[in-house]
Amino acid sequence: MIQFLQYLGESTRTSFTKLGRGTYFLLQTVSGILSVLPRPRLLLTQMYSVGVMSFLIITISGLFVGMVLGLQGYYTLSDFGAEETLGVMVAASLVRELGPVVSALLFAGRAGSALTAEIGLMKATEQLSGMEMMAVDPIKRIMTPRFLAGLMSMPLLAALFSAVGIIGGQIIGSGLLGVDEGAYWSQMQASIDFRDDIINGVIKSIVFGFVTSWIALFEGYDAIPTSEGVSRATTRTVVNSAFSILGLDFILTTLMFGDD
Amino acid sequence: MDNSDSSQDILVSVRNLSFSRGNQKIFDDISLDFERGKITAIMGPSGTGKTTLLKLIGGQLFPDQGSITVDGQNVHKLRRTELYNLRKRLGMLFQSGALLTDMNVYDNVAFPLREHTHLTESMIRTLVLMKLQAVGLRGARNMMPNELSGGMARRIALARAIALDPMMILYDEPFTGQDPISMGVLVHLIKSLNNILGLTSIIVSHDVHDTSAIADYIYVLSGGKIVGEGTPKEIQNSESEWVQQFMTGAADGPVHFHYPAKDYVDDLLSSGKRY
Image (cartoon, helix red, strand yellow):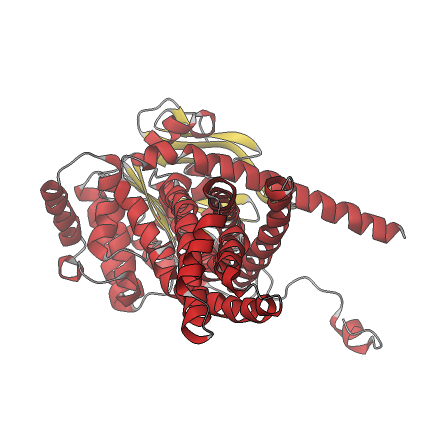
């Protein structure tokens, strides 16, 4: 019993210490923004490796998710003779939930893990320490551009995911199953609200981008600088990002769509 | 040891330094002086915290007690910007080279110049080529760090360390894992750079032969204490058994071959437990 309490106390203390270090790290990273802005090249390089390199996985996944939504939605809606509203169903699911959430999960797996591994290895090979000795702050030079890149790429990737998904739904819905193409688009246009649906979805994806980039960078920075340490940190990035994304999605959904 | 902190000739002075990591005491009240313009070596077996000493001098770690003064400034009392300004005047050569792996050789050497100066690209090019020429690797400027051999990587790192024309270079185990030729090249480079550029060098090493060939003064560390100091000649002729064992590489002596353990026979005969 005593041992259990000790274990409980110890692990609580460890997690809070880590949270504290993480918060301090985040503040330092954010405070570096002013020094990155005059050097857009740093940011652009990272947006390329974090954002552009995730294009393929986001596009393909978005297409398939949209096509499945089209199929399932059609089978369910046609039972009620409401297959004309397929466009609304596909678009609402994507823009409100699946776009931000699934693309953030994919982003954590594709870009987050890569960031953690990169930073962890930079630490293991003394590159971060070397930079410090060259009087270059590794947080401002390495972390801030990557953080900003993640923050800015995420909403764009989520928008891409939703857009491709809607096209996928349309290909299946009106191309294969015979829903009227005009109805698909016009119903969607009439029912999807810019403020309630699209902006809320964008806010979600910005929050997810923030959290995922933070977790990925901090896990790399905090990794034990050995092969095993980096591999564990990479795993933690993906797992913790997934938990945070899903948990935050529930909270945000409650706040955003609760009053409808 | 006299207390000549204020002397012009002492560039780095370490006073009554204590540092521990966890429960392990790495340094126990040691004092060292590093003379301006000289090559001073810190020797000792692996794991005596030689690299830690360099990190303390560079202000990356904080001592438990004592002070370190570099060029009249107490490293651990400096504010962040002051510390960074001091670091611009220090070069450090890491054991691994610590080259940035996402840039080629040229950009690595240009890195400190681009970060700290507002020079035009054509001036940076001239400087980078000069530094690369000094280490004999101007022809390797387009290679990536992973294509370099260990010796080449260290020479590139050296070119980068002298990019901002520092007053002092800290070498962390520069000779470890080098073949005889690149070892010879590095020994020659360290010596000639020190003399030509008027640098002060601190070398941390456990390589007795090559380090004593170029060092002006040697400190031998063990167990958190200084066990011997002097010019290479004095160290060679030291009467300390410990220093003799270190210099000649004898397997047993004051440093025992066996890591502390319980009695051998008892250990073999005790059964039941796995450990």
